[in-house]
Image (cartoon, one colour):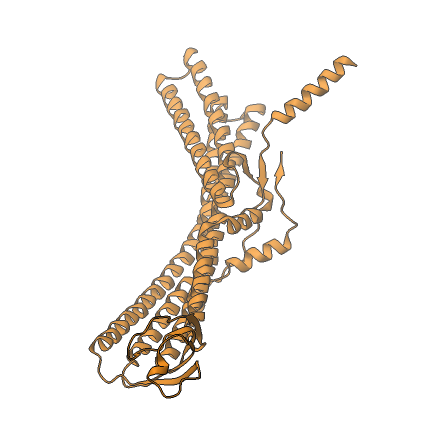
Length: 440
């Protein structure tokens, strides 16, 4: 019993000190990236600021109340009216420019909401492509490791053949160069995995050393629109640019209406006058210490060179924003067309790489059969040829993985350009079971 107890205790301690690797699903990674992103928080703060600006432009019509006091000593004839306290209320009743400023603030809020949606899509795309890159790198490391082992075995076989006088030093050197290049690629892939893990950790808030992917959780991409030219939907970033331009146009209209249009304000003030001053000496009756004033202030600007120049400046800035939004729109449509074309090319290349990998696998099978059963009517197959065939098959598989990753990343880019990325991710979340983090 004592020995069994020691074995169980040792096993528990070994499990306790073994670091757990968090296997995070695709949808969970995207969701954590949205919740953890500082960019999203900044965009949300911009929305809150724009909403406050809109409220500020409307609140000028709500009276602003203040309480003050005008206590003072008077000697001789009193010029003022010292008060124990006074209550003042002021508000704007009419200003034609203010309506444009309210519209400008409202479109500014729309621009902030568009920018928030665009930032969310940026984070979703970044998290999705980083997850795919990490998953592909992990698979490539596995395939590259197998390729390196085949290259090492090939070098060993050539070394034996060289010692037996059946091969040359040139072939041995070539095999060593191949093995060294594959080891270099292995190191590069490991470095890339570290970079992708670190970036995904920053996105999700998890520890970089504990992140690994769940390949089964990666969803299939939806069929894409074959005629992107027929899709006139603009991305959130371009809509935000047009909203900003419209906001500046409304502000420019408001600045241009500052002249030749009346402005009406309301003012109300109640004062409780002091009774210990010498008003009684100079006024026949002074028995009411309550004072109320209500008035309207009319202002009609006739000439103001500064305001006129300000209106021209605002209009020029608004026109510039409109032209910049048009330029961004044209660049977007051209870029989306290039993405669609690139997807067609990548699909064709992926098909070629898949067929080449299949051919290489068939060649491996043929070599293995010939190595086992012989090659009647032909040259005998050697283990050297078998290792070369295995190396070629792994190389073709790695090429296929590279092309497939580029294809999926480009498809995600096109989904975002078409405004379908968030809908796809939402449908993916609903169609899959709850993706909780696992450990193994």
